[in-house]
Length: 446
Image (cartoon, rainbow, N blue to C red; front, top):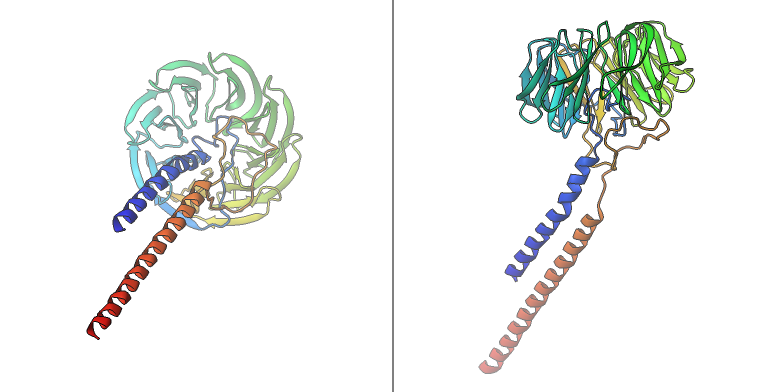
């Protein structure tokens, strides 16, 4: 009986492993990772991930210097982020321990892009780097003529990135060789958005649309500058910032659709979700504007300038301020959900993945707020331009139970019942046999 029970348990373990293996793989692929600045190649700053409802700290990781302006990338359970201590870091997204670091020759104020197990990132040492995402070892580097604050965008095996040598570059992702470059005539702090074969990028005073295959100019628009932020492209509209204005331009020809003037220079890059443009300003406010008309829906005043770029997930807007706080605001009303005070100005842009907000601070730390969601409903991988009308769930995360799991539980209950029944029957038989033996013995003695 014991041998039979052991065999049955072994078979159950194998069936459970075979049932759960594909489910775990599906759950991993269902996570809406954020592989580059502002989530996707259109830089929408929108994710289908669940966001944290409180400022519960998951972990804090100290670097050797400030983390300014940039945003972490989070892919396959790893957080990739740069620091002014010249390093690129890979951190465990669940517990915050360092997996590896790679030291460049200058401050890293470029947000990483991750594709095909490679991390692409710029540095103040004028180089663009390709690093192995697992080990951190250098695959290649490409030298430009100026500091690279621009965040790379990866599309179809090509890296698009700007440099302060006035150029926009297209590089072969595998080798780092140059495919083309376009000289804008001014600094390129901006990170390129790439949608439908067109590269959209700001260059201090102008915004450009370039052919992604050849680098030839399709159109340009003189916005007046200065322009430190990056464009977002949704539904045929390019959203940019210049000086103290937010603009909506036609993606086909660069014509102005609307303009909204804030009370200060806008260095924050816009996020677009559910028909609303979210952006910060140096007038200390976070704004929500109608994406179609540019009219103000709400504004939220912080204690200092907001050059952090908002990120939208799960019905909330996450953004930093130089008042040292990271904020979670209701995306519909602008009401504060929670805030957390770090040790210094917060210029880094948050990212939300799988129930957690990741963000850096000028106090040298990388922060993670929230709790890792065990499983979540399947969501699409990053797409160039999610529909602004898509609904964002505000429900708390729930643990999903698969049909395979329920079937296994039922089988286990049946086998346990049969095992217990057989055991009891065997025990009853032994008792009956013992009683018969005792009766025969008594008769013999009499």
